[in-house]
Amino acid sequence: MATVTGQLKSDSDDIARKKMTNSIAQEEVAASINDPDNELDDESFSSAIENSDTAKVENKFLKKLLKEKDLHIKSLCANLDILHKQITLLNNIIIKQEEGISNNNHNPEINEFVKKSKLLPLKNPNDKQQKKTQDSPSNQAKTPNQGDNDKKVMKTLRGYSELQESVQDDNENLDNNKTLQNEDDNWNKVKSKKRHRRETNKPIIGCSVDNSTLKAVPRISFIHVFRLNPSTTTKDIEDHLCMSNICTFGVEKLQSRYPDLYSSFKVTIDHKDQDVAMKPETWPPGSCVNRFFHRILKKTALP
Image (cartoon, rainbow, N blue to C red; front, side, top):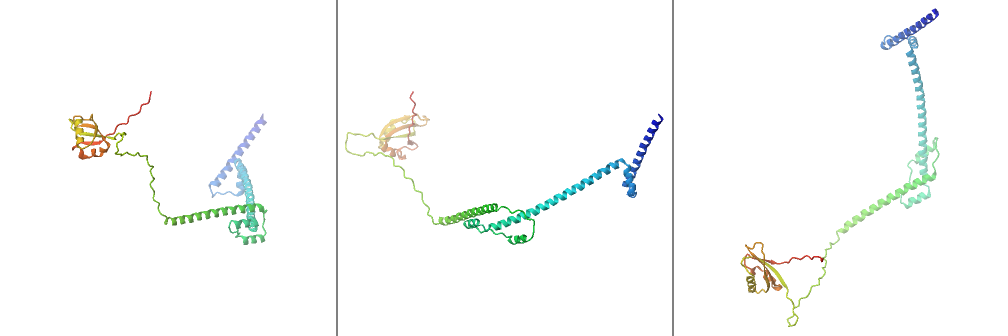
């Protein structure tokens, strides 16, 4: 029993001693950080960090960060080398494509197409630069296929020829417009002619004086006489027209709108006397005369 209590007492003393050393180390590190004048030497600083548990954990974490930083720097350097190689490869490909375009100028099919389309042959302005690059050693890539280059050049030439044809058509249209504008001054204005009306089938009117058994029915006209004295009768109308040598076939008294003020009559006369009957001198002052029109009766459907 005594041995057990002695061992527990020794363990508790060790724990208390470690806590005391950790607290002392932390106080020394904090004092060195907060007070710039109180600087510790490297040995005392490292010993203080080693004696504290939290400092050990932080030390391991910082070492791990430094290793990851070194690995990240190495990967960035490798990517940079790859990008430099890609740039040199692209430069070599561009140089080879320019050489292929200059070689296509000697292709007979392309030259024949250029002659037909009335286009100038393609000239590469970088011929001198190509000679210099051929003399200097470089990492050259594989040359592209000659057939692909021919197709590309033929396609561009067709586009140029179509563009040139469209421009020529526009110029011709502009020239035609100019000539038409000049010709407008010499034109004569055409007057519109009236359309000939179709001749209607007009009847002829007989005028024979010979005595014959045939007799024609005279044409009659109807006139409306109104605003006469309310005491006027049909006999008065007939006598008045007879004095003017106008033949009457009938006089009918109408129901006027205001019978106490004036009277109205429908008079049937010969058609040849219509002009005389419509003159103002034929009638007394204040009276009114006009042609009489009958209403058109609506036809009713049979039951």
